[in-house]
Length: 189
Image (cartoon, rainbow, N blue to C red; front, side, top):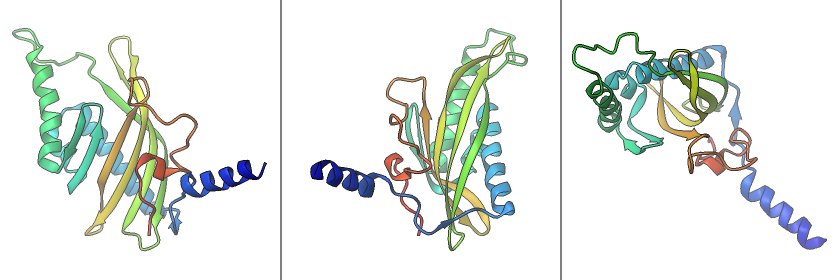
């Protein structure tokens, strides 16, 4: 019995790390971070590589289903390559207009801010629909580290978990909000 109790205590200390000294966001901080998420999604869905990369810090890191991109140039190139690949699939004379392109939706965002207000962590659910009629084609969650530069929020890192894709899902029953370290997020402060 003592071994089980010691194991439970060790597990709790090792894996149940909440962001240290974090606080809830102000209304303005929440609005700014949510706006960043929406700019990110519109840029992705419209395949605007430069606008997408602009949501990241200059040395930002994106971990996604296709690998990892580091820095704005590499992040923009990733989105631009998706656009080029999709445009190459169009038949002669087609513009892609009205093709019921992929559209992402973000919801249930949880945000914690460092006590100094310079860093944040956030998690949110996402899903994407495509086609006519629309069908959910992918879904998952984001685990983010954000940094405030000159009063503006940017992604320092974004990890995309695609729940429907083999090897891209979450850890079973480990909540990223209460156990961010399990998803690679360093404690705040």
